[in-house]
Image (tube, rainbow, N blue to C red; front, top):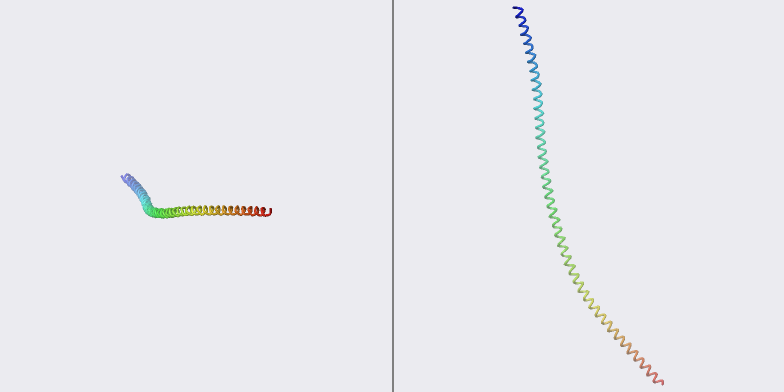
Length: 156
């Protein structure tokens, strides 16, 4: 019976040691699992923090982009308005120059007409003067011919 009790005590001791070893292994595995879980949680928290930072950066960049787009639209609208004003001013200047050119053409036509009239009058006066000169020369030639005839008659 002693042997049997000793053998059972030895079995109980081995089972107790096995149980303690299993408990130690479970504790070590549990500790490792907790450490891995804590690491995973910390990594997830870091990733979440990075995601929040990235989201904030994206929102900031979107805000900047929207502000730049709005400024570009305002600048473009101002530029278009400015160009429109320049075009209107150029059209007004063109209209003024066209009116001025029309007036100058009218003045030039009137002066040309006056000059043509003056030229016609000058040509008529020259023609009349030439005709008068021709008549005078003709009269002088007739007078000379008459004088020569008279002198010829007188010499005969």
